[in-house]
Amino acid sequence: MQQNKVSNSISEGRSARTLVGIAVSVVYMILLSALITWRWESVKALELNALGDFFAGAFGPLAILWLVLGYLQQGDELKQNTEALRLQAAELANSVKQQQKLVELNRRDADARAVAARPKFETRVVSFRESASEGQKIHISLKNVGAPCSHLRANSITENVASYLDDAKAGSQDQVVVVHSTGPDQMETAGFLVSYIDSAGVPGSQRFDVNYYADEEIYSYQVGGEDDIRSWTQATSTKID
Image (tube, rainbow, N blue to C red):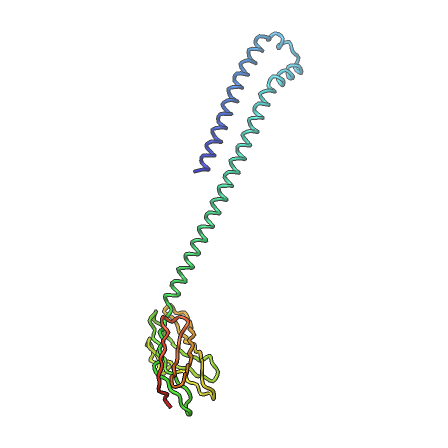
């Protein structure tokens, strides 16, 4: 719209100058014709070279007038082209901003879909025991309350500690992870990764940490994950040997 206003303004100015030039030219030609008629005898008596000089001088002002008008018209056209380029640049910048916003919205939407496709696990210590022969063994309930997933696996990331699914049922969203320490030292903390393929077919994994607490006859384990909804703690006053 702004470009149309500028174009209209320039066109109106150009048309007005053209009309002025035509009017001045007509009036000038009328006056020149009247002068030639009035001095016809003198004009007729001129030699060819003198007659050429006369007409050159007579039409010189008109040539200068139209030269000036042409220069002003060319300036208007340059101004119009410059304004058009400026508006195109502004529209291009606005288009780039709109594209950036669209890309950002698409990225956020993709991130939201990716998050919605991932499972969410609730963890709970089901049972644990310690014995000299078997070491420490903890059974942890792993309940998926998020998007369905498949190909669940549990792998330990702690030395001398094994982590695996206990009697895993294919396709089940409720599993039990066994964390088994057979090292000579008492397990105070351990970590394991649960890997899966989410509902969008994208592989993923989540880390879980197990912490052991002992105070006289109170023994407890706590387990929590990076994407857990809840962290559970269970304690017992009876140590299973």
